[in-house]
Image 1 (cartoon, rainbow, N blue to C red):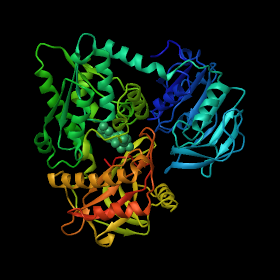
Image 2 (image 1 turned 90 degrees about the vertical axis):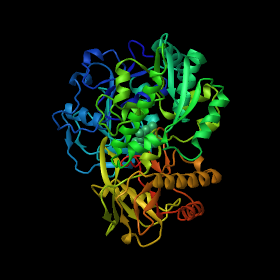
Image 3 (image 1 turned 180 degrees about the vertical axis):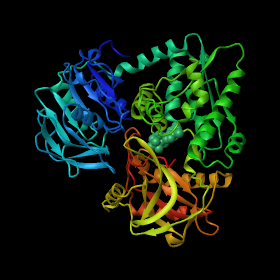
Image 4 (image 1 turned 60 degrees about the horizontal axis):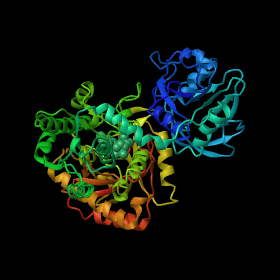
Length: 586
Ligand code: XMP
């Protein structure tokens, strides 16, 4: 897909967002490649623009990503983003100050001097950083700041060097696309050379090249990604060379198997079958609490089933097809330097072996969810399927939180500290911390989400802030029970999830959100030993997310029904954005 000398190179300084930057540039009609940050300037001198990505490091760490200092004078215009900005300042004689706590989430940008890069006026931007720039190099001028960040955007028009502390590539930065557009066309003089409509014929050609004379075997999940990948293979290779199996792991949502069977029947996929493997998965997960271990076990079980099936395909040369999309690869460290936030089930050891052996075809690895949906629509897949919310491969297992320890809820001046550990991502590093519950209703205009953002930026060692919606008793009398993945708890979560899904669909709320995980946590009292957490979020690609408010009427209806579920003690509402929290709790 890559032309030999692209106009734009994105230098990967270790952020999860570097491929997102490349994609945003392509959306603006200019092809961009991703290169290692250390790429010698001599190899980049013929580019029109270089963008240095964000990353988790501090310029003061010895092993932190570097750039060849000559990139700032070898010809192309340069934009440094977040850590890339700090790297630029540091290299050119400015100062970077170490920060302990950092700033994560929304901020208001005050633009003093938009120049050729920024869009005038006060605007929302997305921050995710620890260190800050405290003095800019000679020749640079200050263009914008925020309350907490004295140098939020700077530039040197003569040398065509610009730096922004916020992330223009994420949707939460109001004029992010406009800023990138200004940089590419106004500052760097790029011309349009990329049309997204090229992508389907290109993907099909890549599939034929990868597969050669072999045949492709898919594990389909009924999700958008695997269905689109399957359909692309079906189109480029023909139905005789593509087979699909749906493995019922027992970790799926209510009614899922029937839905998937119906979809594939209506697509006329001849080589499609369902394999029921629930007892095998549940036995392997018995007593397992650790999220990473759950993912590994589920991934390995899928691989075992797959290896058994592949072994049964005698005399034929089959390879595995997967619907892995871009975020699945980066959050597992697919960008050269991004920390492993968690291992995706599509990247466990067994799959790595197949990748190493060249026995995998993954047509969607450079695309994001919204692009995959667009491709699906171009392929004529039904809107009912394409509109489905993403659902994680390991299924309800990673929404059924377990605990080895017992513990008590503690009433603190900031709220109720609940010793349940959940995953977060701060400045691109993975964290695993307890959560805090506060009072209030997360209804539109309540200000509760803002309160949660302020709280989480102030507190260290906390990943999530939830609102307490309903409880059988005062929160300080709730406790955390030792609990694992039992059929009983999975059934409880499946029920709760089905209730929430039905009500969200009936009210139309499901169309207002990008995803709506329902999570079970072992927090309760007496015989009611679990609580349900609602996690409705808005996102564009899963890389960043905002918790979404809900009307009081819907909130009361949902929590009322959930409190009737056997064993449920309380209902909470996750108010945290990503970052610092991830969308899923594990
Ligand atoms: P996080 O929790 O990382 O989620 O903010 C981002 C998106 O990825 C989905 N997700 C997964 N999908 N296997 C998957 O197939 C996984 O292990 C997994 N973990 C998270 C999540 O639902 C969200 O859409």
